[in-house]
Image (cartoon, rainbow, N blue to C red; front, side, top):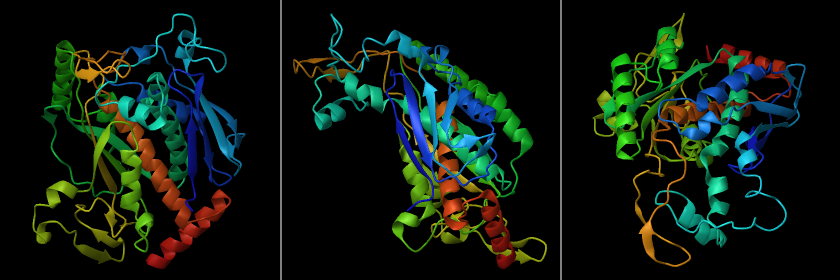
Length: 390
């Protein structure tokens, strides 16, 4: 059984998105302001739609934290949907649909609409849309921010940034240093598309604006890097314990994600092994170390002490202003897809969500290895492990 468990609930236009996070040890300092800052970042980025002007996401802690520290009990929280005020009758828990309500019967290509209706037997696609919406990622962003509070206690740092957006790409970087580069992180945070390279950032903004004029959408690739992660997280002993597999599960569970790469996964696949594998060195001052990080910090399903590097590929948003061909599920007649308020590009926001998801997976693996009911127990286990591997 994994150390951390997260359950989320709530519809996109319901009263709230809620979650229960189980397994966090007692005594972990918790800064709610930092959690809310992550939620705010998730709502940002050039190319977002009109709903981001309505929602002002903030976490409401219901249990599990007292006087700024975790209690060891389940952490329950909610994120209120301010847009619920406009949907209260359409999303009512009791009673019949309001007078004049028209069920949604036109399936949108690329969405969960058709598959969800076929699976659950609904005659109103709204029942699928509400839960399959990316609104759910607000809860996982918050859970990831809580997980970061644990990792922060062990001097683990991180960043996430956009490397490709539509036709615009940036150059690759070899992440080997154990610390997050401050200047690079500042550049990411100041970019409207979370791209550290100023010229590429401007071109990405222009690409989004051009797609908006065409009634189209854009996707791309982001990179998530975690620094100072100790070796030995994950396992080579069972398939479901391998850390890279767990990271893949986490990334691909985010809405619209279609691919994941660990380190130089795809580029390394076409090179000879002599140009792929990271040679091993040792010094009394630095211990075991590498001078390259093509493996992305993971070998054999376990962290090896280098920064963990994960890249995710996000498809373009499925809701287009320019309609696509579809079929009305009620009449079975050919038609064109309907437009709902949507983003042109949510890739910068997806990088924020992915950073939280990777944090959650690493925190889970961290507690799996360095188990303890209190933060001090975990600290003692980490200290012992570091002495042993020297």
